[in-house]
Image (cartoon, helix red, strand yellow):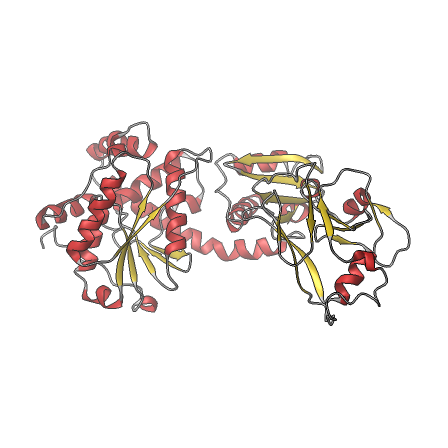
Length: 454
């Protein structure tokens, strides 16, 4: 059989009728993938399109976009172009571009659609080596999976078992045109250094090095799958008081190896960047050891943060505090956007209360709880009268008793009446008067977090 003859494998049987979207960069690999998909009657019949992410990082980026348009026109495949802004987060330009690209893919995928990526066996070998050099565990060594969920659809890597040389032979034999990204020759980038300097040397001694690394990645993926069930069960036993927290005492009860896997799984579930190689060891030493429980013990990486407070670990992207001089008048009719990116809103209650006609306050115990209100930052010394109480308490002490972590207290907006009395602290605490007002109108106050923050 001619090695230049390539055919795409069939979609998994459960998704045999799913539409497919080709991730098209215009390079060799994705150009071959586009040609193979366009030659498949089954994929065309399901609905085939292509997606190009325009990063704008290279002077030729516009030309690459137009090349992709011409290629898709030649094959009769619709193309969507998405422009993204690449925002560095301390983990290098490669990771930043990849993060922006995958976010665009996830957003653009339609329900049940399959995104096909052109990664091949050489890419898998490089990824395996990079993960090993970063001291990754079994999950990291599994490298790239051929199939996984992504956004509203699925991600598929149909070429993962094929060497790049075979893709090149296919492209040349079919007269395909592709673009060469000059950055692929930049040896300052880790993957390029492996590709151009390390792997060629390894192949001189071990010609099957790429296949061996890819096979090791498959074995690691199999082992990872076997461990997943136990990880999920263990994670359930150490959950804290919120999805962003874990019990320190519960973590101590786990074997060290399982504890490390649970920590990584928990971080991934929060949508945070993967922990670096030293991450678990640092958390073990600084947060699970004799760390102070006042919210100062922390481990930070790539714009993410794990803090310890009392008996819990909390994972988050650090958010800003509410500016000290912030004040706004609010009538509650529409959501109020705060400087922190959070939103304060009145929504229908869920406690069975029956709303009366808005504005009918004659039977209210304290009509001063009605709007307009002032929303402002804490200044210190505020007091609040809680439901069921007749005297006020220092808000600081009430928040501490309510187990509100110190970094959330700094972000918490206060809602005050026209006479200055505190009616609510975010959606954590309500005064007696405001609680009665909310119940009377069948409403509740909600503080919606900004995306990515607790």
